Amino acid sequence: PVGSLSGGNQQKVMIGRWINSGVDILLIEEPTRGVDVGAKAEIYHLLRRFADDGGAVLITSSELSEHLGLCDRILVVREGVIVAELNGAEAKEEQVARFALMGTDELRKSA
Image (cartoon, rainbow, N blue to C red; front, side, top):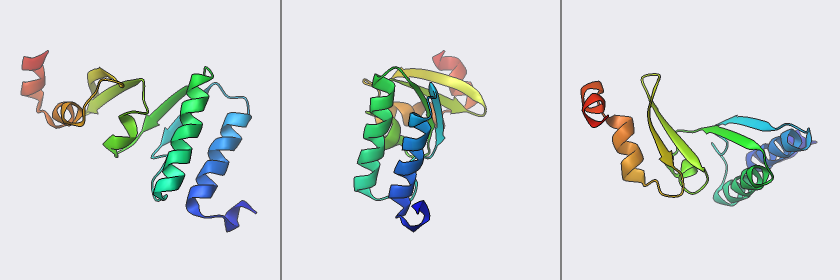
């Protein structure tokens, strides 16, 4: 049974089930929270392959490293407003953090 697997393997099974159910879009929150480094890499591979095959993957995560290198596009949301849209391949951690931490006045000035 799936319940006897480690947290990382349970997560991989769930993502695999969703992908194999024929969905076109995956909306995933914190996909690798609480899993080991090896399981994270496998989960990233599953999500990337799904996207490469034409699926859409929307990820919300508090781990910035999950977005860098995995996402084609990064939307930075602050106080319920999209404050930046960045190319995932070109985005840098400092750049994303700057938009995430800017105050409202600073955001208006940078627009």
